[in-house]
Length: 401
Ligand code: SR1
Ligand code: MG
Image 1 (cartoon, rainbow, N blue to C red):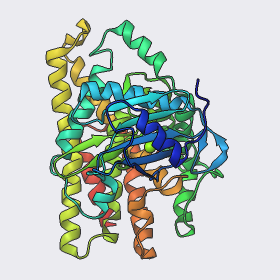
Image 2 (image 1 turned 45 degrees about the vertical axis):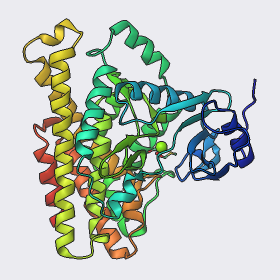
Image 3 (image 1 turned 180 degrees about the horizontal axis):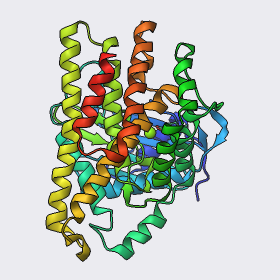
């Protein structure tokens, strides 16, 4: 059995040569470590003809913090098994896994470097006209087919067991639902928004809503969710969308993934004054982002209802009124989780480049305030929301302040 060790460039090349069907034994391979995320090593390996693969390896600690924050290597198993399930449900939207190895905590997969990380693309102002259609279908299908609605309920319980992911869930529980709402040493924010951070720590109305959302995250095993579906977990071109990185996958509330997508579009929306060259561009990009938010929800809802009507396995799901209430619950959860995910990216441990790389500090500060205003209002309206239009309205209001 191979013992775990972090791969060197040479190890990654030797391993790549052993994976059947990819490289010749005598191929001249080059390899770069390109991981820029918080947790893992990512090796990009190419041959002299431009053929390429990715080897991703989990480290036994959170790279962003260091060895003082140990993390289970089991997340590599979770990631490759989740990718396999998601790929089988949406083959065009999820990369193919070629090989995985539990001892080494590696996943070898399709190289997507002809795509761009969507966060970077959005910062550069790229339009993704098919994104909402793609991600709406991804969300509807992966959530439906892994839930009690779309799979055998006893098999689903086995799946819940397969995807118990305590270390990564704990990161979310702490970084998203706890730290931002108290003076935690994990928090990280610029001094110019200390007033905002302190207001979060004292806002008991907000604390109640976040406690209720956290309870859903802890207890509602509705579907196999991606668990970290921000725009850094999506590779995109204007024509194609690929969802990667499901190492946070576990059985949780469906609205969490939808909320993550919405939050990250709205973080980019908040950041646009830092990236748009003039008023007209700012206006157009913001309109486009809000349309995407609305379309993501509509595409999800349309696909999800169609699956429910045509494929549902659970007899009780035919009960009149049940589908409407179920969809309403997902919308409300998505709105609440979106708010939490916006707030954490401004005052919590891990931020987003959309906002933090804005060069002019006054514009950066305003972007943070806009994101916090949207995030807080989404959290506060979540339990009574009835349409995605309310999210758009809150975003527009915050942008005017
Ligand atoms: C310590 S990990 C920080 C964040 O990075 C991941 O992408 C997740 O969003 C996590 O919360
Ligand atoms: Mg990730």
